[in-house]
Image (cartoon, rainbow over all chains, first blue to last red; front, side):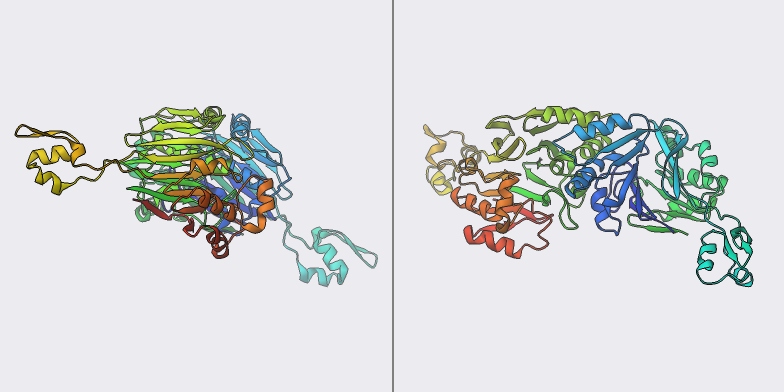
Length: 300
Length: 300
């Protein structure tokens, strides 16, 4: 199961109810952090997500509302005696900016912070059972969208058939794990009782971006698309000018990409409540939610 | 009247209840910010203190828990179309570190941020009716304590005596404002009816510091001393090693400096509650409080 928590959902400036951008994704004992807006370290304290399990941070772009939590997070990790490397993936200049963060103030960091400049569409990193891909999108500065892809999972195990074939005891478990077993002189191969691989789950996240056709292909059939929606439909001209998206554009993209679910985030402080905002988007794509701080999502 | 609000009172790392260091002082329509820990801009949103009225920020030293709120605060001020200069006063390297903050990320700041390196005891700035002084103290890196000094106020006006001298109408106001008036051929000088100047209020603030004898003189007879107390008395050896103060040391200093009131802040996350912590300090100096986030203080 993939779990996510929205740690901050505001666009540009925080509000009383929305902190700066940050989303934590928990999978296989690891936490991946998408964006690290100001105060992310403290937002984490109100959740069950430990900062010490974060080894990879993905920064969509270098505007302060997406990265200003990094100095504090790194400093606190160091105070907590972290020793492991911390990887930061972002667009062009990530190395340069991370280097400056580490030189601002008296830091004495006890671990290595490894920055990665991602300048083209590619797989940026992989865990045991997942990969993360990046795609440059269109914003006022170099910006990336990210995709978390769970590896395909083993197909369904047909226990009844296995028993009929005479498999039992420790062999049963062995076969279930995808290894051949011998029953007398007969070899039972896993493909006899295990169905075809089941696709892993896919979550696509786009931080700040203008409506971006490229994202349709990148997000294709994602189980979840998290997309910025800084503005409502009434602001679409302005949104275009400042290279942001509206709720309706994000919903249109979700529809075209045939994703299963859409969550809108990076909401401008101008929207004190989001009833109309959500309704506008739902007209285009029904399975839409508007993120709120500390909203939790499970992708099973 | 001088008003203060504690925006963050934690030491080193934030906790669920305490944000990183920051104290806002409101006086004569202006707000002076002492420290700018992470999330100061959002803490301000829960108060009546507008970030746009901050023209001067005082950073005791360049550890992240004292300055990591600067990038976000500056960014948001810019988004709110600030045009006025913002002055940042701090110890050695302040110019260098502020310069790096302004170069980290794509900033496009619409106003000038003017940094000042303060390397010796001196008056660092003045407003219409106040001055701020700095004193280098002893911490693991270059660190300053600050003192806010209200200018002396005009003495008490003796209205009865003024009337007896025949002063009335517009002349009464004129005399009250400290100007001589003529009653017939007689000149009435303000010193005849206005008592000696009354001293202004003084607030001394010391961020991170080891017990520092120099502070006794600097804080002498302050109306309020705000002093770091990272640790309780049981940690005094450790406190000495890492150049911090204990609650009891701060209280001792308050006593020696003959201040009127002491507020302890920068409390280590290890102290979940502060009943004993406060009691230990009160034994040395009775008029002591432990700061909490959003605690408000008036100095009249």
